[in-house]
Length: 380
Image 1 (tube, rainbow, N blue to C red):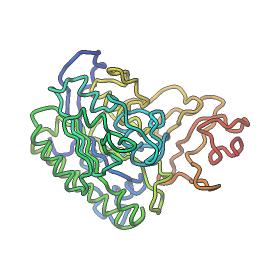
Image 2: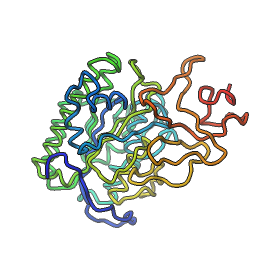
Image 3: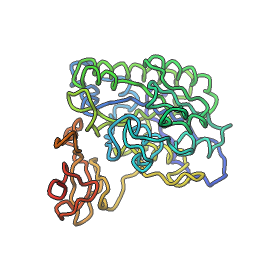
């Protein structure tokens, strides 16, 4: 099999019954790129960005040229802590009391997909890895105030290391562990700190932001090569995911809901919500999106199917081919959000994306997710 060719596997089994154990069907590698704006990624991938004259060959190879699918943030802040919480658990971060990088609590025990894999398949059947570039925002220190988000996961997974810093250190550590565990099944989360770090320092439109994307692509290539050398590329689903986007041309991501997912998993057929990433992986592993060992059903939906029906009041309506529309009597309002004082922050970084919320805006009642910026007629 050529490096980076599509990963095609049989449909996932039915969700595993409580207490049942079986072998994990394949490895999962979740490659987290922090702060990737969808528009900038697409421009770089498609060679429309002068800073990316060769495109992103490793990402193209991973997807066999299929490109990226849109991912949109519809709950909690467009920031690091709630971003990775939603991606790795499938739960609405707001419902977990995780609002942004300043207002959060630890993720409850058993909620992450790594912990669920341990519980369902058994710790002797799966190796779980959590490697992160950042410190507090991806930390598991229970003595910190407030306790960091991944305290429970840190105690449960086989290897938990954060604050690794530079991309090369994350990749090198990952390659070492992948090689050491090539004869076992593993599920690994790798967090890379760019282009978020560069975006805050230089701005989203800076040449350095494009260079950061190319550096990520380089290390993705090294990871894919490592899988091939270990002869487990055909046994590994790879998901490249982003926690949030970046404000167009700015040094912040206060209103940046538009990002992406790229994968060799041919079962993925659509874009979706940030919460849908975990739901997809749980579905593909055969664990399912329902309750697991006391953890409630997840809020996300698998990207392997296109939902039917219509979107009910208060729920997010997403923009991808074949996506359901708002139910009768409802209208879509946008993803803009209040800024400081009277300012409103328009969602940027996803040109042409019409995602929003289905509400009864105009009925004179201000009902969340309506607020003064996306429904000024009802919210003052």
